[in-house]
Image (cartoon, rainbow, N blue to C red; front, side):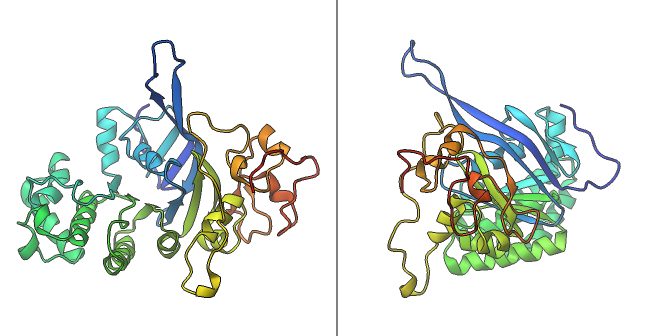
Length: 353
């Protein structure tokens, strides 16, 4: 694939179509049949400029793999990715051009920084590699440090071990902005911070988004954080998108049983609303051998025979206030609240409750 730039501003800042990624598993013996992990299976979504998309799901569902695919850190097996009008390619020149458009902030703020480089040098590194003169890169680094709330005179010469976790994550945010990207991906970027620092960083991200006109992809296990910072939310299960839509629509009117279970697992401050029965039971199936049809059916109390025979496609959620709210479930045709199988579906024996 070649990197091509559109002559007009793209309608969508992020445009992902049919993204797939499998990882080979080392066989247990020479005679064993080769196996693969189905990490990401046919992921598609579009993101308009200035929008924050939250991506949620259990560990191992493919969230971080999607992030690394969009960054070009690993190569997709199939699919098309366009960011800010550029098509993602593994060609060196194409990747270098893409790095100016999209940057990423990782969960581990310490491991993300070179311990032998000062904070100033870490922020300067990207622009210098892209050909920016060192003096200009240094001015940019100091300006960004000030914008993320770190006084350049105090912090520019320090090393990663000389600052706190929250300060290191601010450095990582400044480094991500040094190339003036249009899209920033956050992979569990605030999960390692205590709550008081977390809210400071979240508010900082909101301010920077407005100031620089950024588009965010925000990956997190914390559903409250995703609700706070996101405009839209994408729910993944075992490598598939099961629901997507405006964040408040999805939180107020979840259409997929898995989304309902996730939201029901959110802790409540009211002791009268304690969860006494687990909203979801069992572990996710192995991504090496995912179930046929709907991948959630082995843990869904509403599963029917149709769920095993046919894979559901994303469709408009029943009663949704927005056409952008879609879910992949055969039960969408059931009356709201009833969750009974469709007329063509017979009960599936062995479905877990």
